[in-house]
Length: 136
Image 1 (cartoon, rainbow, N blue to C red):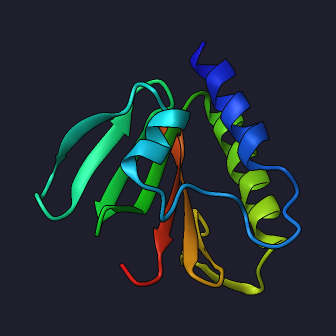
Image 2 (cartoon, one colour):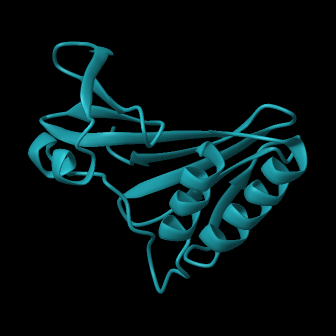
């Protein structure tokens, strides 16, 4: 079931981007609750609360009542994870020419007009995707 949800997330997120990828940054809690009915408060600071969607395995950090960070973790088998990481990098890079790789080539940050996306791969463990406002 988790793999099915991960693939659904992948296909939804990875439509070939004409410009910048869709995301949930700058959305308010009521807007997110429409998309993620299971959204619950999960720690953070009073001025920067965290909310999570357990079904989507996604965490949102708010600042000034808007999403400032969207973080998703996908776990699975190593071949699946590496293929997922490679596909994500390829698709996200299509919309930006500003890219910063880590020295070990297991994480990348891709910059857009008002946010950036960091994608990381941990062998035999997970792939993480983080959208973050440049102003955060």
